[in-house]
Length: 196
Image 1 (cartoon, rainbow, N blue to C red):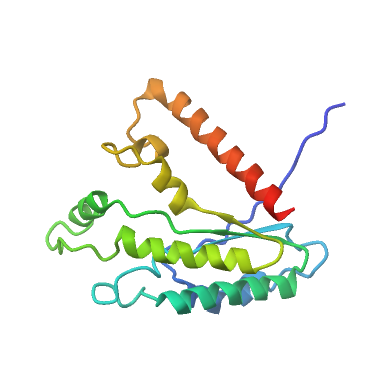
Image 2: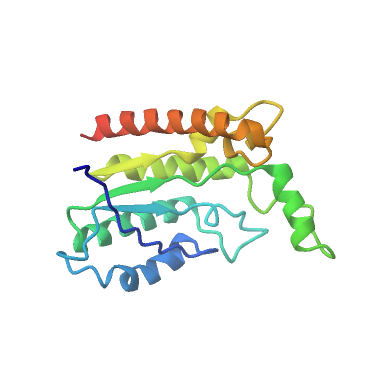
């Protein structure tokens, strides 16, 4: 008789949210966790891309980095209060592809693209570092450093297309996926060993 692993995954993503808005929604999300049957074993927190928006170009979504970090700490605390045994994985925001971001503006707003970046890779890196500090400070937590991993994998002349498999030719996708999966498994083993 073979054993099968099973996981019930509940996606509670909020597109466009920053940590300030997510904090107001979090009690409703975790309110159904009763500490027994519905208590999760693993919770991921993945914010920062919107928080890292530049205040002069996207004040609505921008959250200062110190407040972002404090918000993440509050999220972990609220999760711990309801699900004390859950492992929390903090995921850093991904890097910003400047050329792709400007192209997105042209497609999204064909009559009025600003031509200015409302978020930058450098600024997002500061938010990724803040998220890493939160994961380090919190017990039974781990970090998935998406920003750092993608920075390390970035081919000089291709951007992150190989890493993301977005523009890889069909015949190369399985090879790229295999390499990416192997790297992520190694990083996961390292992270688990450090936090065991």
